[in-house]
Image 1 (cartoon, rainbow, N blue to C red):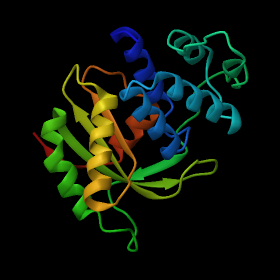
Image 2 (cartoon, rainbow, N blue to C red):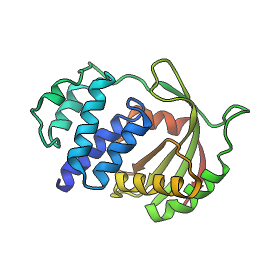
Image 3 (tube, rainbow, N blue to C red):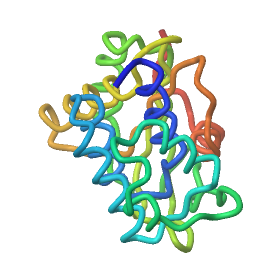
Length: 197
């Protein structure tokens, strides 16, 4: 997979945030970052079809440009929708009184951010609406420098979170030159800054 194709796969992953579950999309991102392209393709396509997550014609075209089998039946099984639905979550800077304490994750992700070329780290409480694939949780957005490999930065940060704290929280990594999908826009709009370079 060349750099342009990898960038397109990264963009599709960014667009599907909030539509696929955190775990499934995380697995897809990690597999692409690790060079396991066939595994990533299969996980992506089968999950979209199984859970009935629709993609737009534009997203279908993007996917055809990087899939190992762009004309295979798996892509045809994914429903096509007219437009991207709004994020099925509400984001706010503060969580409810019984929300888990994010202090340790804040500290770890802030300390880890510079090695991922981080520019700023933001946290929001993500509350699900009808149709959301995941429940309520603290959600992070790591803004990174232009040209940073978003998928590799995601994989590295999530690995640190799990190895050090045995915690998994939703995380989006967005390079400064990358277009933001509605999910990332909503997450940033409802967040507070935890760390800045």
